[in-house]
Amino acid sequence: MAVVTLSSLDGSDIETFAVDLFQRWGIGKKGKDNGLLIVAAIGDRTARIEVGYGLEGIIPDAFAGRVLREVIFPA
Image (tube, rainbow, N blue to C red):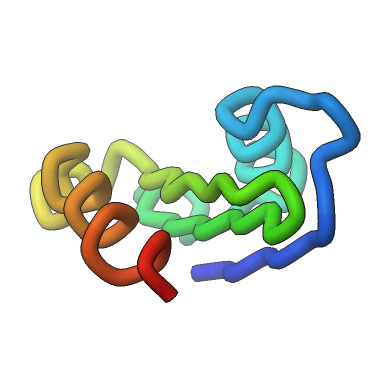
């Protein structure tokens, strides 16, 4: 698991940034694809939770979206 905060994406797309960073850093155990990345661009007022395929059964998109809406964005 990794949590990344930055002031701005400087015009980049949060989804592309998160996917690229997830792959570049190799988050999670090799062969299990069980990594989790939370990216928050504070100045852009955006965030994303990227989940490896190995965790999708435990952290589905609906749950990740709810965490963003109810926990991360209000804070």
